[in-house]
Amino acid sequence: MPEIIEGVSPTRMELLWLRRRERLAEKGHDLLREKRDALIAEFLDVVSEVRDARKEVEDKLKEAFDYLILAQAQLGVEEVRQLSLMTIHEIPLDFSSRSIMGVSVPILELPGELARKVTERGYGFIDSSAAVDRCAKSFEEALVKIIKLAELEEAVRNLAGEVEKTKRRVNALEYVLIPRLKTTRKYIQMRLEEMERENFTRLKKIKVMLERRKG
Amino acid sequence: MIAIIGDPDTAAGFRLGGVKEVYEYSPEGGEDVARVLDKLAKGEVAIIIVNERLAADARTREKIREINTKKKGVIPIIIEVPDKEGPMKKEIDEIGQLIKRAVGIAVK
Image (cartoon, rainbow over all chains, first blue to last red; front, top):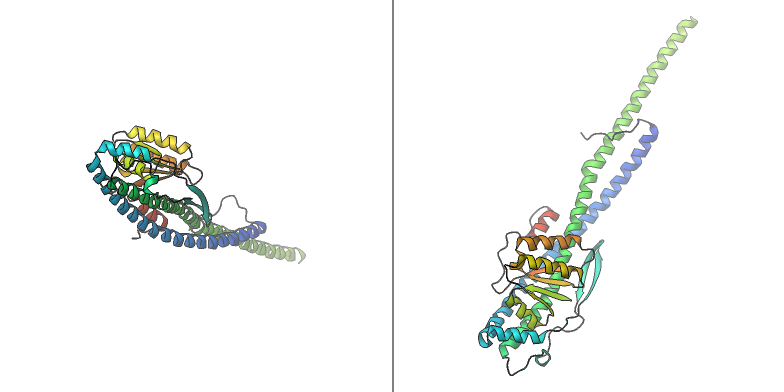
């Protein structure tokens, strides 16, 4: 049996007030429960996407590293490092966020094409090889996939946090607040009834006493 | 902007892919990774790509958690990727744990 809320006086006013609170709590509970269910559905959707995206990234990176090792074997580790220093440039990235049921989820967008033409990469043809080209291409492709994965993973993290929060609220209402309000209301009701009965017998007694005095 | 923290091979690869902010570290440099993460988190970097093997270091892991809880907007997003030896066998499956906490049961 849940305990009653402390500090309430058994009055009719308090009873009305409690009834109103109980109704409000129940309405809030229903709404939150709906929110929780919708969030979980969304969450599970994104989770399966994340799993696929992660797999893709891992496969792509594996391929990219294979080409890297090949390039390193052909040209030497230091040479590849030198070439890589020539290719750097800025990758522009737009980010914004959208909101799924009040949860902000990032959107990352590449404004341009990440994949560059061979001639745009910045290293010379004479001291590089086809393996370097393939390697650079794979890493560019991997990056696109990683950006996608980053977006999804972040979404999952944020959604999970919100699901947890909403769940805690639903449970707090369902198992703590609403039962407490209910027992408190019952307690006041019974107290009021008891007081009424006391009053009734008191009146009876007075009536008898008055009649005896007359008679 | 995208930043990479990784071992020399990962660094070279992503540099070839066109990333500018590349930080090379060997797995022993745990403290440095944490410091670089701190620095990047303060800047305008949208995605920080970290090698799984580097992120597995206790101090780095702690730092990543700290940045994730402290950040206000959606960035920076820290993402872990495998290195040339392939995906690591993870002791803790982060996504799996999230599902467990959110839904209450493990969903495959």
